[in-house]
Image 1 (cartoon, rainbow, N blue to C red):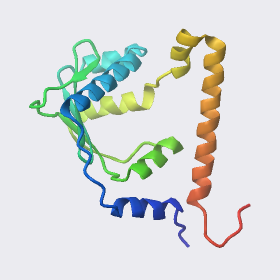
Image 2: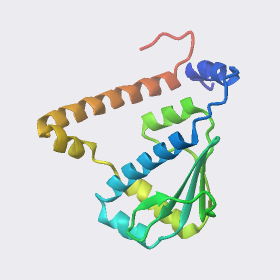
Image 3: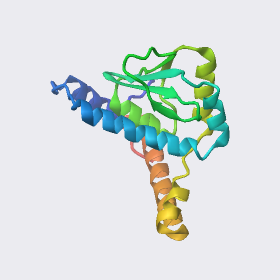
Length: 183
């Protein structure tokens, strides 16, 4: 018997609500994208191999899409990323196929990657896949620069415990069968 997540009911209700289409001002979208690029470059600069791989893909344009949101990035000669011009033609298109924000959040909390449809340059796709698999942001190290080693480690451990607890909760919720007692 297949089980259904108790969250599916909530998700169904949210999808049926006639919510107004959120349209952010262009300047706000651009600024948010700039901040994401700064964060991505900060993480990339911690990994020389990642920068070397992006250098080989210089001037290649990647388009990331989810629902009505999209984000064009270009690999720079320095091995970093920058926003691509709106008229730039994408060499690689990555579209997140799951439309549900709740399902994406659950996937992220489980530590899984979202389902993505990839079209375009195979070599660029392989490099992006390598980046996703191997580059990680060491948040604890960045926090330690600001607040010291002990508080950063404590905060990091608390975050890891919270994430682990959420993962366990989601795993139990996914196997929940109404009418059965919890163990």
